Image (tube, rainbow over all chains, first blue to last red):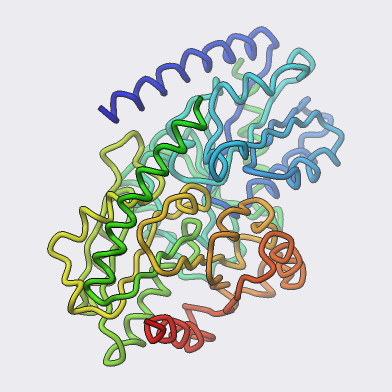
Amino acid sequence: MEIKVLRNVLDANDLIAAQNRRDFDAGGCRVVNMMSAPGSGKTTILERTLRGLTGRLRVGVIEGDVRGTLDADRLAAFGVPVVQINTDPHFGGECHLDARMIRNALAGFPLDELDLVLIENIGNLVCPAAFRVGEDRKVMVSSVAEGDDKPLKYPLMFRVSDLLLLNKIDLLGHVDFDPDRFRANLARVNPSLPVIELSARTGAGCDRWLDWLAGAVAER
Amino acid sequence: MEIKVLRNVLDANDLIAAQNRRDFDAGGCRVVNMMSAPGSGKTTILERTLRGLTGRLRVGVIEGDVRGTLDADRLAAFGVPVVQINTDPHFGGECHLDARMIRNALAGFPLDELDLVLIENIGNLVCPAAFRVGEDRKVMVSSVAEGDDKPLKYPLMFRVSDLLLLNKIDLLGHVDFDPDRFRANLARVNPSLPVIELSARTGAGCDRWLDWLAGAVAER
């Protein structure tokens, strides 16, 4: 019974996601849904991204948080359109963004003036993986500080993603993270997932990520 | 409407949590529910804990994961009773433990031979905070690698906890974490939350945590 109800929730979500998809297409913009555990560095990556894409692509951001506008404030400093979604009205706050939240956020968002919309999902490796929001690509961020066992423990997130950003590589040597073991664990759940290793803190590897984004937009 | 349904879910959960509570009391054991983001170091802390409490307290572990027995395998090596809960049957896996899952795990668990049961919740800073499981104490782990803004972004978790373990302090200096800013952010959401700073990797600060656990058991 419970599984059936959840399936209905996901089916209803997919209908709204398809409406979002049509709006994104009509506006001519690509949409990337960025997901990770709390503190993996999504917002710092987005800061690097907005700085790096200035003059190259017109970017907007939809920022999801349980509460507050900390991240939206950091990103609005780059002069791009930013909408904040707070999921707090529910018990403890919803732990993921869904298609309806994105739909509500789109009112007044200038889709036809943008090439790329980056969605920063709630920090959570479980439920965000199950909810489509109308995106073109799902990108997950995993930090080496989180350990090399994560693919085995949160397999769905690693399976549904189109790209993995392995962040905080500047910490290698300071944390118990074996890159070979991580690659082997990843191969067990999604051997075809592309990986870009980077450090949003130092900037290492970030050019490859910007090129990947530019490529995703160019595919249109 | 939706909020009402969620409230009913939590009310039903609380009834089962109260049954668990009675069983724990009847068995004469204290129960600590450990929560954190993925990769904050809960399992490594538990390894230190089991090693440190050998001969001092009789400890059992209930291990929650979306999938797999990686953590349970690590902890069973210490020769203590370990039960693994996998939340995977649902869509993408449930993102939290609830009282019913703990109740099911108790069958065959030797409560009357234990002083302390440690529950390792699913790695998630949102929903686990909302579900009581019959525990005496909620302990959250936050790693300095996750950043100093987490209290503002996941306030409920910081509000419901009885103790905060600030882990990976060996990484201070390698990550953008300002201890003063963290304390100030924490003071905004829960000024009375006790904090123990430690590194499960090096062992620094772990004695204070073991003493806190021994104190919680002694209070009975």
